[in-house]
Structures are given as C-alpha cells and as structure tokens.
Length: 119
Image 1 (cartoon, helix red, strand yellow):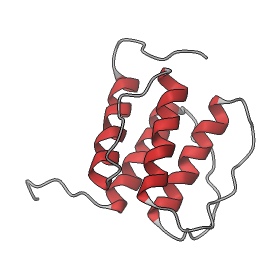
Image 2 (cartoon, rainbow, N blue to C red; image 1 turned 45 degrees about the horizontal axis):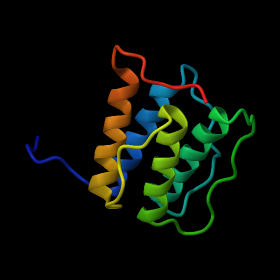
Image 3 (cartoon, one colour; image 1 turned 180 degrees about the horizontal axis):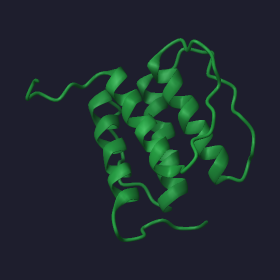
Image 4 (cartoon, rainbow, N blue to C red; image 1 turned 180 degrees about the vertical axis):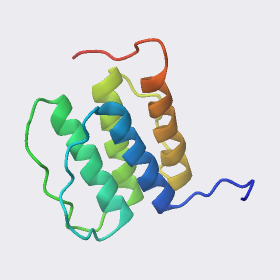
C-alpha cells in the first residue's frame, strides 16, 4: 500500500460514485454505455444528481462528446450550488482540485449538522 494518495481521473470517478451513493439511499440506474472517458461518466453522474434535485425524473443521456476537466469542475460547482445554495470553490479546475472538492462535498453531506438548503 502506498502512502501517496493516487490522483487520477479514475479515482475522481470513484469519488463521484461515492458522492452518488451518499446522496441516494437507492442509487438510480446510470445509462449502460461504454463511456468515452471517466470525465464523461462523471458528467453523467452529475446530471443524475442535478435532475433529481431539480425534480426532473428522467435518465440523462450519457455524454457523447469528449468532456474536459473544466466541464467536470463546472458541473461539480453546479451540484454544490444546488445542494448547499453556495459554492466554496472558485477556481483551479484540476483533477486534484476536483477530487478534493468532491471529498469535501461528501464530508459536508455526511456531517452531523444539516447544512443542506431547500431552494
């Protein structure tokens, strides 16, 4: 086991799956397709969360265009805004920053205090 934390698109995808599991008791089905990249899969997860929070009950279409880390970062900020009504991250759209921000969202959702805001 390494003492160095792995930072990769795959670990970012796995953290976003954990975020999905943290939000939902019964995880919605994700579209079954072979995604172009981990970033595309992450955007699909974010779309499931955003559709649920906005009251839209439909399975989002998987992302077909090649996604970038900038798009993943922006989508993560939108998810945070929808859940908490505010955003704590302003810039730095790197894999490491998105991974850390996803971990912070999971922590905030799992904390004992209810920090969620109904908009």
